[in-house]
Image 1 (cartoon, rainbow, N blue to C red):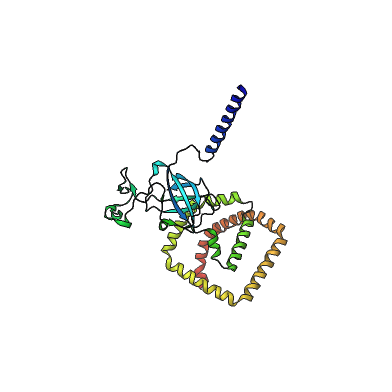
Image 2: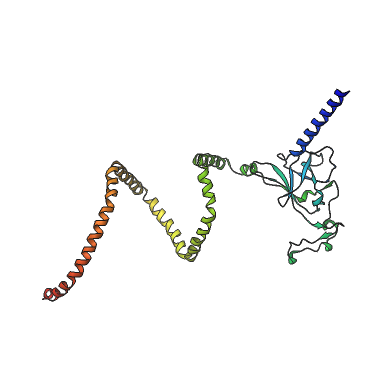
Length: 309
């Protein structure tokens, strides 16, 4: 009898531990009472999973509990369980599917819609300006918002479909898609191993934008001159296009010049090494010439009459 009691106690302990881990990692407890639930139909909910977040203004207010495929609708019916503090949901609330990252977890985003008091009467949103406030008491019939009842269904007109990334790519023609793939591949090669530099670049965007605002303000004050520069740039490129052979020759000649400099890199380095000495000597020479010019100035003034005669 003692062994049976010990085995039963061990089994119950294991069950409680597993139940605790299940609830801790996002699972629902089978003994937990059901909270307020509403549903909505989404045409594209492939990546949505059970126990996904339901959010209002970035705050988690519930979880997705069921995913169904009703026969009467060509969509996925999503049953959401809302926490009591955020219930009920208004019939004029909007729902959409969003992703935490580009390829991350999908969640349901709800708007608050009309707010209701404890008696179910609509109240004005204090964050709404007075001139934009709608008097809900003047609405009637289908226009009047009301709290959705338990197991209520959000109308399909309140479901905002999110544009999927594959829809964007499908809108591009074959040539554009290939060019985009090539650009992404080359970008991967360009930033490979440069993650820290890229991070620093993004970190400097703030100071850069502040400094750029001063530059843009100056350019705005020189708007007419800037237009002339842009217009004349087109003229310059037209002239370069008309003389493409001469431009190619100039590029080839420049390349030869730099090759010659590269072949004389030691002599060029020696030139730069002695340049500070040359600069100092030239400065001393100019100072002496300045002193000489001051001393010779009276002599030249006295010689001017003789030179005229």
